[in-house]
Image (tube, rainbow, N blue to C red):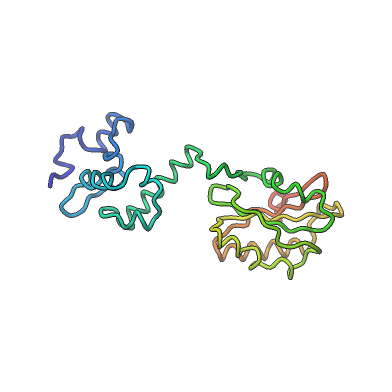
Length: 223
């Protein structure tokens, strides 16, 4: 087996990248840098070449952890590194999943809650987001007077766990037009935030919506 350090300097993937830039590297050389090390009897370039011969690049980019970790020459640790690199690339290129709406602010969330402006009864709605702040699901949890018995953490986080949401935004309307959160509103928000922390699902905000305005408990410091 020829070791990487025994190759001419400009044939070593890292040195070649530094000298010529990443655009001048072959696929196997780029993959070799991500893999970092080879395996017994094979240097990292040989491992990268074998992987790409069996797994075309597009198929490799679409693979999940289990598929990557099962590939000879990758394993669990390298699978995590590859997945992280692939995800960063997708985010940098602003690759969207099915053109899902992105929620980066309270106003972005409000745009998904317009029906609350005219609702005559209180509606409690949850927006479920993935790690890229994309809206992947929306659900009405309760209709009627807002209280802790109607808005229970299990009713809110069950869909989040089922669809693998990373974070949520909760919202409800005040048909009275009063934007101020009630004591019950604050209690529910605190209860949900505590439950979300245990589950690893962040409660990003709680919005109160009226016919011509809205308020954010996060912006007011209550969330």
